Figure (cartoon, helix red, strand yellow):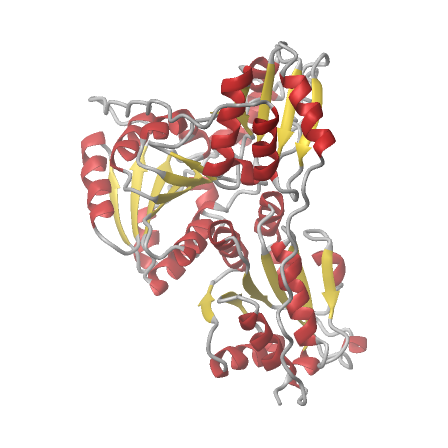
Amino acid sequence: MMNGAESLLKSLIDAGVEVCFANPGTSEMQLVAAIDKIPGMRPILGLFEGVVTGAADGYGRMADKPAATLLHLGSGFANGMANLHNAKRAFTPIVNLIGEHATYHLPLDAPLTSDIAACAALTSDWVRVSQSAQALAGDGVEAVAAAMAGRQANLIVPADYAWSEGCEAAAPLAAAARAQVSGEIVAAAAGALRSGKPACLFLGGMALRERGLKAAHRIADATGARLISEVFPARLQRGRGRPNIERLPYLGEFATETLKDFRHMVVVGAKAPVSFFAYPGKPGTLWPEHCNLLQLADQQQDQISALEALADQLGAAAFSPQDDPALPEIPAGPMTAETVGAVMANLLPQNAIVSDEGNTSGIFSFGYFDGAAPHDWLTLTGGAIGQGLPVAVGAAVACPDRKVVNLQADGSAMYTNQALWTMAREELDICVVIYNNSSYAILNLELMRVGVENPGERARSMLELTNPSLQWTQIAAGMGVQASRVTTTEDFRLQFQAAMDSRGPRLIEVVL
């Protein structure tokens, strides 16, 4: 027999959960002790809960199964909520274990008491407060099953149930298969694409894996439809030998221009595109009024099978490989964000993983990587910044034999720079490329787009990262990560090549 914490942990391990990203406190000590006692769970400490939850997001995107997080009460959960918001938008499987006061202590309203269930409901529709020590194990395997269905599962664990004895582990539950799309919907999509009117497939989620993209290209070859991905895909498989796809621009004006002529839009694994924000006098929806929207498969249905069924319905030929795009030339002269992107596209190793939070600095070089070695591209799905560094941590844990490259804006890096410490402690094979432009550049752009002209000194001071300037090599060194600073394209090429040729965490600060 075991105590409640031990039965929960054993049940999670038996259900396939192998990693726990943790920032525990007093109410979680029984779970900490259980990880020490029961083999099979790798504990990884994050120095801030946003690192913990972001790492679980990166892990789940690459492993296609959940990691656990261990969070301290409602306050610890709240610290991790921004990256749980991103994970929710990515439909990443995660099991959050959230400690709670002992049930008999709750009426005392101790300082850390809060409504954890209400907070947890903001990031997930699967929230459970365990009702007994004996229920913990069963709650745990149900949480894993819910996560595997594309949901975030939040399990709240009262401390007295965790330390109570007389518990047993629960058997794993079989993961439910993704729901299939009906033949009627497939036929309706085929009819729209056969109409001869301008059409596109708007893809996200699992549809952006290699198999889904091959089916989409079969459809495009048979119908002339354009293939467009959502702005921020959770995981896009791309590079040489893989089908290419156009990415919808972030800026609403450019997105509207991209979509303006379509009469039919078949949506797969995504929601129909909308502007990230409201702007004076501009529409929120990005597709034209005359466009017929048809949802072939939503984010929790079997998107790949739906695309393959649609291709077969259209009588599409087998996938035919495309000519690989050429790699960009690396220009001479001053270093810019674009020259940095050109260097990385040329030197990216086979099967790398890119965690992209480059924001304004990375946007114009995204297309360079179509001709790079095959790789996976992970983006800022929910728009809550501070994702790139932790997602790189989780991806490196999930795929220890693959190089991870983090394209990272300096402003958003400051939200979760503690991830560097975890990279060093776990000896993760990550190269962080910091774009240091000493500002929240995206917000300078947004200020202009909402109609603010000639902002004054006080307004500009809220968007600039100077006085003092951030010293990234010193920040990295203080966290135990080898770091260098470059100001020329040639220096960056030498430093990036060295990082690709070696293992372990490394940071390169690019001064723009």
